Figure 1 (cartoon, rainbow, N blue to C red):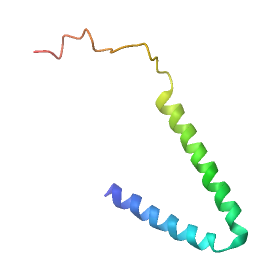
Figure 2 (figure 1 turned 30 degrees about the horizontal axis):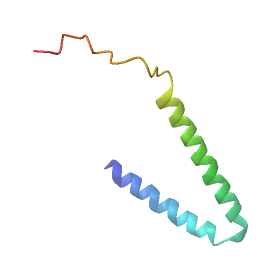
Figure 3 (figure 1 turned 90 degrees about the horizontal axis):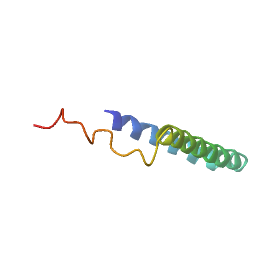
Figure 4 (figure 1 turned 45 degrees about the horizontal axis):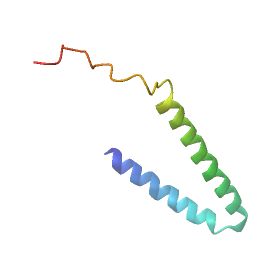
Length: 69
């Protein structure tokens, strides 16, 4: 069901972009919006996924004997 929502949002955004792109006055605004949204999304993902990770930390479960038979 979640994928259907993504498809619906994609169709609506594609339709809106095609209508906006046909108006020469809105082309620059659409491009600026899409670039800014992409930059903010990447910044957010990098901050959330990469925040506080120590590349030399190793595996925390390495010495854990609780899950071994």
